[in-house]
Image 1: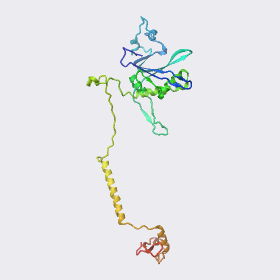
Image 2: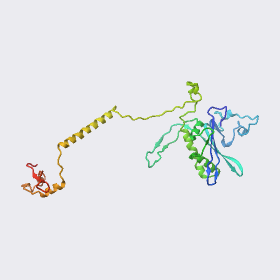
Image 3: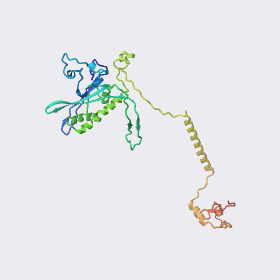
Image 4: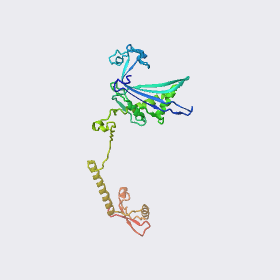
Length: 335
């Protein structure tokens, strides 16, 4: 990896640590985890750990390179090489280290994760049913391979963890606790620890990539005021959705007309109800009056014709001489 001074400005490094958590079963404290983040515009992966002929093995040792060893780094990272080793652009490397003791010897267990971020568009399908897709997840088809890699700044990863460069996180969040415990479990070959790799690594990476719309460039405040050159102005944008009530649209005017017509209809029904109001007659009183009624040849000459009997018209008249307070009188004309 091209890390350090003299390379591209995109090659950066950052670090932070996570305090160890208390293991109440063993009554011990799990050691802290040191996290180092490296971003490089170019990286090389050696096939089967075999170095190319242009690079002596002494060049990749941690010790100083002895003279007159020639480390041709420019050729190593050249894009026109003969293809003896793979090259990757805009690589992000996250190293998580935790000290351990093995057979009385102090060692460091390091878990290294490399990833690339691609900016591209793909097609997807969404199942809107809450039964078959309760989490409302989309299903992506084949991911395209034509996208370009994104330059990921270490500051985005620090922002995802909410920590300063060189700072220390307290194990008071689930992701931090799981990272400390999982790395300690890997040293003991715990299968549960390996299953948490995606959780403790993938989620911070996804949260990091959600910040790609932002930039780490310096503020242009110095252009407007030299006094603010070292104090960049933070801008804030917000979208406000406002619902206004008024009569400016056709829909509003139509609604007012409909409401006024309904009011007029209700008032007209109320007035007509007072004008043509009828006295309420109790069904019990009508039944008693019907039982008290004495036929007086109302159905003369039509008693054998059911249709004419059914069309015989009566009216009800109030009286105080009967128990039902009503009497039935045959109307003069029937139809």
